[in-house]
Picture 1 (tube, rainbow, N blue to C red):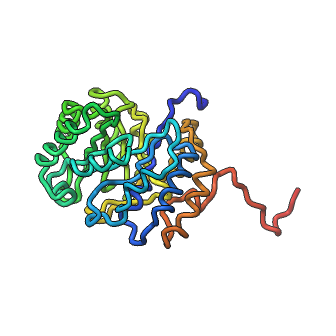
Picture 2: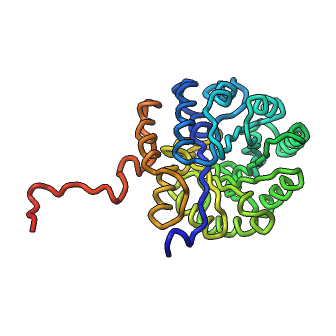
Picture 3: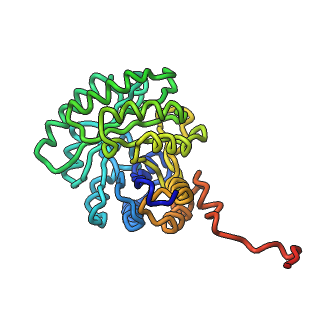
Length: 313
């Protein structure tokens, strides 16, 4: 089957927010802006550019206003901001974010660890944000964290996840993300839950957020894609990880995902060569190696000379 037989897979790049939020080394504002601008020119149509969480909670992203105000916005690119509450939403609108992403866990325990409040309180706060942005051009996306499992509670009832999705839509959220916050999902589980959710909302309103904690990240992407999902979060270099999820490693790697798509004929509209160059620059920026594989191994078409002792026929 050729590439034209497949629908485009849309990548939402989350390294500038989810990737940098737990980095111990401060990445300067100019460097953040340069990274986002380069991701824009590489063809990323959606970029989670920062968050408006309390600087005390996430000091690595304390420059959210400056980043959003100074990036070189490209036509057609949606710049997303994570917001935890009404104050964060007010800051994000002031900085001209295009979309606000709100997060609540399906797990009560994880929500209290991550958001420091009950799920009921989170939903109430979401209602305040919905009312605040009414009449503006900003869109709202709400994430169901730990949708595929919780490191504290274990298995999450799928009916609970569906109930949260329904609640989000009733509140007026235009988009919903199912997040495998701790990398506990498996392809069969993903297929089952994605099919159920897509009975309630269109594919262009659903995002999947996978971590590669147990090595199943890209397998879960293919399962979700085959089940009808078309939009996926990914982070350059495989950066990221939830600070409130023990053992959670980074997000699925953007360049690894785009390479997979190119290998099997799924279009993404992203310049893979530019991604590889950007990823190879991350260790110098962050001071450590990154999990992504493609930038280390190269593309399958990047051939090498045979050893000198091999006879040429």
